[in-house]
Length: 113
Length: 115
Image (cartoon, rainbow over all chains, first blue to last red):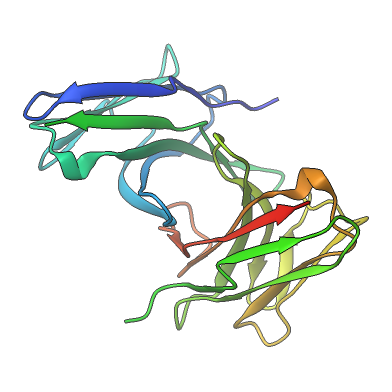
């Protein structure tokens, strides 16, 4: 079955870069997303990447996609305490005429002051 | 602009009792999603609506779960009867279109505890 895996925890010092990794299983994914979830809140879309791209940069965020290895990463430059949250990768693909969405297990990022 | 509204925020019930969650999506969003998020996990899609039509309910446990979106706006998700394993956060999300790049806007969720 479909599965999107992430490491559970990541701890970094304020000002350092954070790299959150994700592996996915469906090679026909069309879009891959990164969502952020703060305590007691719903998920918020951070950024996304088309499956035909290798990299996308958006201010402090850099997304890298390795389709061959089905590996997605999110790099946060100059990590701030406000970046502490749970980060979810998600993939979407078309099957049997409908879109399927699968979220990863989430990576809890803790930023130390 | 108001975001996705969900109520209640918290619900504690005993097993075998019924429970209902309500969601009001962002105005104008025709697609509505219900997700279940277990502790330490990512959200899992239960059902997706396009207007009032349920277009994907393949992951909805139909023996005890039901949902409706009668007028294509707000929606209700019901569990009857609830079981201990139903304890989770139930998230509602909405989006403008059903296309591939459809940014989903999530509500804060309803945290259900079944005792």
